[in-house]
Amino acid sequence: MNDETAPPNQLLELLTAAPEGLSEYELLLRLSRWQNDDPRLPSDTLELFRSHFLLFHTLYRLRDQLHAEGQATLQISPLCIRLLPYQAGEHALSENEPLRDYYLDLNHLRDTGADDVEQMLGKFWLRLHGNEGKRDALAALDLDEHADELDLAVIRQRYRQLVSLHHPDRGGCTQRLQRINSAMETLQRYYR
Image (spheres, rainbow, N blue to C red):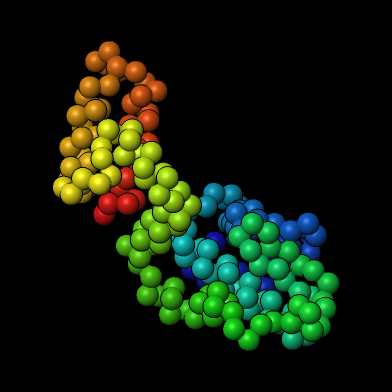
């Protein structure tokens, strides 16, 4: 999806053809094919965020329009975007919808840079993995999470030591090296 929002009629046509709904990923791929015959999504995180934002901006606008006209209810979630029969009252649009407000304000798109996207992703991974992932990663690098001097520089130093020790080219174990690399990826999200 490019920097312009997809026309609501394209979205409506795609969603009508998929009564079971589509994930955000599937919808972005189909829109991408529709617009330029290239079914790939951007690999750059900022461009992917922009595609996501523009899609949700358009979806919320379409949802408001469909509701105002009494045509349908549009369920919006990254895992399932689908049209549902219109039902006044019970599924009426809420007055206070922080996500809707966020996506309808194009200033958020304009003001969000690559560093902001990286911070959002880091926070997402922290919530997803919780402290258990951090503890496991520290254990994989044989580090004490309660050590006062523990920071990214200390973690990187320990990582380099373990990579040197466990690299398969030096007689180490591939699986152990993979655990060390995975632990480092996890810890970089916690220690910035």
